[in-house]
Length: 130
Figure 1 (tube, rainbow, N blue to C red):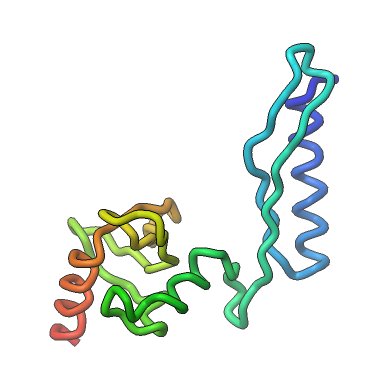
Figure 2: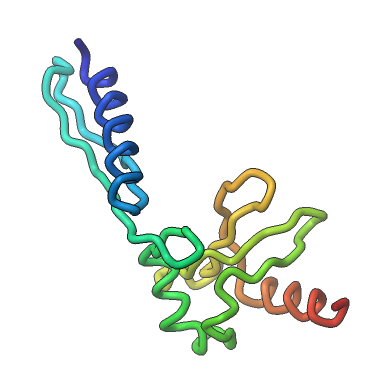
């Protein structure tokens, strides 16, 4: 039994527990001993909102600090188009000056960082088209 296999099994059990508790549990990085017999895993747990989406620190930061970037708190979850792909605003990284807005690709779910200016322009275009 190696640490990687055990970590995978722990993650599987955590996902079952997440379903029972109504939360999102995500396994983060871990540190493994050279022998692979001991390890520590980071686990992130997020409560789900009414729509079943995780309430992350980044989503809370967006709602709290949106006005500093000329957004509204309800812009969280807004969909915009960039380079022919659709993205959904999922949060704010207050430590990032250049690319503070976090958005997930609608098609893949992968997260990307964007400048506030780019998102404002994209949202304005979308609102004008509607």
